[in-house]
Image 1 (cartoon, helix red, strand yellow):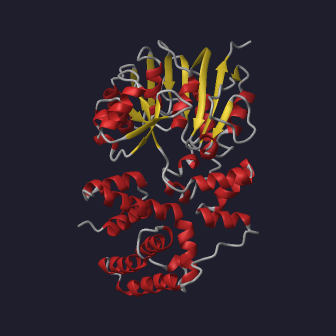
Image 2 (cartoon, helix red, strand yellow; image 1 turned 135 degrees about the vertical axis):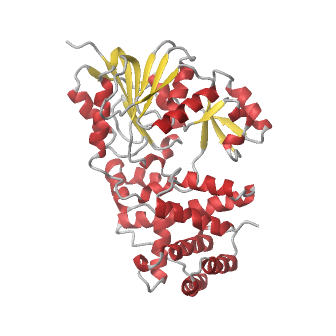
Image 3 (cartoon, one colour; image 1 turned 180 degrees about the vertical axis):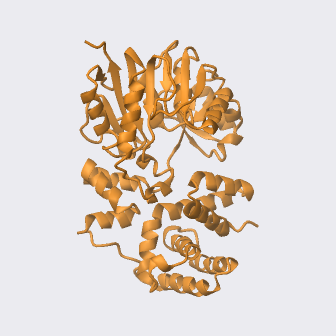
Length: 446
């Protein structure tokens, strides 16, 4: 019988000590331990629960521990986090199991001295009438940080950039797992047929109302095991990314550049809009990522994609003049924290250097756009320095480019005032990942 709590602890340690991505570390652990669906769900709930609530959990540890948090050994700290998560945030776990299994876990890892410390804190929590109190609401930033387990720097950024109402709704949206979305491969099937095939495999699929050929998926298990996936009938892609490609309006026989392409989802969707006719150059600076793009294109039956090893920031490889350019740049990832909750604990999330790197990629890429062509600049983050300010600067410094007003589909609304050529998608207004899109056209130089 699998020791699910031990598996969860090992995944958390891999994420904290080695910088592993939560989804990859978790999926590998599930496969290596051959976990049942029930055990997989429990381990996932433990891992993501700790990652999503770590600041809150550490705040509670501080309230009960005489030892400063910084002096508590990493394994002990994570066992405490797991125990408190089960006691206070997981209704189906009995208190006795949460306490006893945490103590057993410490002993399993030869933390004999820590086992008594862990037992004492967890039992004190079970006895307390009021388990914990949040900071005073007068210190609004600290209060929101602890309540939603997000660093104060991000809380400040969102309150200052988007207003307190948007900021709190954004913070609230980070709890729980984000919906799985897919793009129907229209080169091989249609939405209704795919919904039926997925249903035959026990997957619930529902059309996303604001974009054609996009589906929400439930009960997927491991997506790669599905016959429909192996047959290349769809690829996984959030609705925000699908909207991004939709706004690009790629046509058959277009030449398109996807300058920061990996893992390739946007190139795949564009190929479907182009009916697999034309040329798409999917670029990345790492060869192993290009191999993933090629493998994905082969699975989907897409032949119009050519991969190209290239550094988008240095413009080190010549590219053809293109009708469409997708410039989805490296970013801080603040819009996908619900999918990768560990992102919020990175030290350099709000970097002063990143906007300049992104702007350099945008300017270098724009040189390849044909007159009359369209270019999209996009990120999966929520930071005006990386988004709105970069595009405003670009238009100011490139008079031969202009903003193209976005035609927003029903159900997609702006959370705050922006220019007609741009939109910041937010989970609470659009039901998507946090994502920024701006659309430019090019006119002939005077």
